[in-house]
Amino acid sequence: MLDLGSKKKKAATKHDSDEEMDYETKPRKIADEWAGRAKSTKLPIKLPGGKIIQAEKEEAEEKDEDEEMEEVESDQEEDHVEEEKEEEEEEEEVKVSKKQHLINKKEELATIATNLQEDPEEHIGELKTLRSIYRDDNPIVRKLALLTQLAIYKDIIPGYRIRPLTEAEEEQKVSKDVKKLREYEKSLLMNYEQYLKDLTVLTSKKKAEEDPALSLVATKCLCELLVSKTHFNFRLEIMVSLVTRMSTVQWNEGAELCRKALIEVFENDESGKYSLDAVKMVTRMVKSKSYIVSENAINLFLHLRLKDEMVPEASKKNDDEVVGKKRKNKDKPFLTKKAKKALKETKEIEKEFREAEAVVSKEEKEKNHSETLKLIFAFYFRILKKQVTSPLLPAVLEGLSMFAHLINVDMFDDLLNALRDVMRSFEDTNAISRTSSGTRKRLLCIITAFELLSGQGEMVTYDLKEFYTEIYNILFKATYHTAIEEKPESQDMTESEMIVKGLELMFLKKRQIPIDRLGAFIKRFALVALNMPTKTVLQCLHLIHKLVQKDHRLDALLQSEDRASNGIYAPLLNDPELCNPFGTSLYELFLYQNHYDPNVRRIAKELQQTSR
Image (cartoon, rainbow, N blue to C red; front, side, top):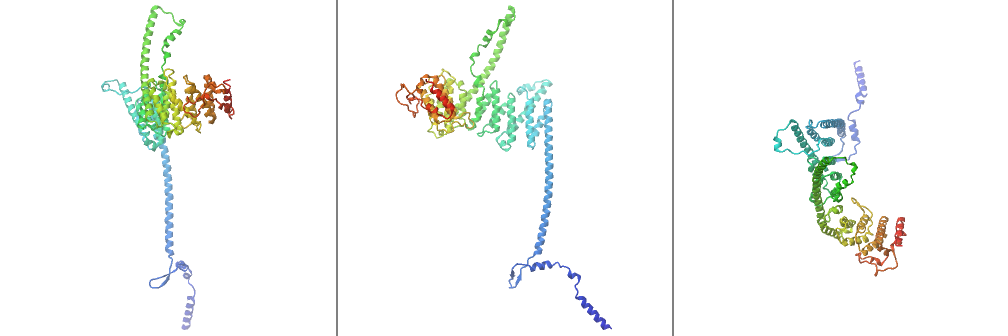
């Protein structure tokens, strides 16, 4: 019995051992590693001992590293997103704070400006607060501070110049009101000077490059102060800043603002004192720059009041007598002899007072104008004689023609010789003159020379044959200039207009001109205009028509018969008086009558019929 039981137990145990247990059916953690090894594609490796083994890839380690890297990257991305959110929030806060800061500063500036305009003596100390606001980091606040100070100073600056007190005046006892006024004026001058220093620093070349917008605002402030408060203190300091801003070859907006401000000062200057100061500074500045500046800097001289105010007024000498003669007897009230005598004495005294005041004003004005004119002419002559290649030469020649009637007759010889030298330096033998610029400068010399003599009448008689010959040669070569009717930048006239103006100054004024010279020019007009644009052709034909009507001896050029002149016409000769113009006729008129422009055809026909 015992044996059978033990056998059955053993059989049951053996049967149970063949069954798989639960843990055996579960996947093993190392199974992936084995699977990876089975799929390894690496070549076997031979060890130093000769044993060959299969290279295995440690994927588990790589996977762990990849997982760690992914976790680190995800953490970094989360941190980066959080940082961006924080930065955006900070930027929004900064924007809000900047906007609020700007609003606060605007309100503060408005409050200070209101207080100073209502009672400047009481709140004069707030000018210092305005200067402190100008030191703000916000560029908008700085601009507003400058403009606010400008408006305040334009409003509170008195209509007189504040004179510094002497030591005796400071020690002298004065009333409370006078003391308060002196303290106010002293504080005003001190703050105004500091304000001008800030503006001057901003208009410097360095600051203009760093912050052009703020520098332009400062320039506008200086210009407005000079124009509106020319009489006040520190006028010369402002002028120096503006003139320095114009010391550039490349003209810019700031320089143009300064130029316009000085022109306005010239036009409003009654005494000529302010104009004299400005002219001194401009001439010194140009000289310090070796005459290499923009011509706009000296073109402002053309706006001086010298041209009109220095003209002698001989017709006004006896104004009082004329007025007295025109007075009617019926307008006079009835007076006794005693009353008439008293009235006469009173009028004489009043007249003496008026004359005394007028003489002082007139003498001061004439003195200032004379000094200004001397400076300008000395400046012009210096450029004519020594700075022929300067870009300022066209402006100098234009200025000389503008003030020609004010030049002393004794200076004409030197001036005409200087113009001849300049003209010769731009002749065709010079490489510079082969350009249109050289021709324009020669024409400017010719126009200036005839402008000088046009205002003198018959007081001077100079033979300007060299200038006639020069424009005679320019006419022939002008036919090859394709841009004869194009106006260069910063120029008022085209080359065609300059030629016509020079010819009109030569021939339409009351001058005794040899008939051969006049005929030679008319023949050359008609010849060269054949190759010129229509506008120039019309101007030449109009000029020929005027000259023929002025001198009937020129009718011989319009006729082909009954010729009294001997010889033949030499069109290529450089001397107009030797080319024998009356040896030919104006045959060109027949070509003009077939011109494509109807106006040219009409004028040519009228000119042809003039001699009939």
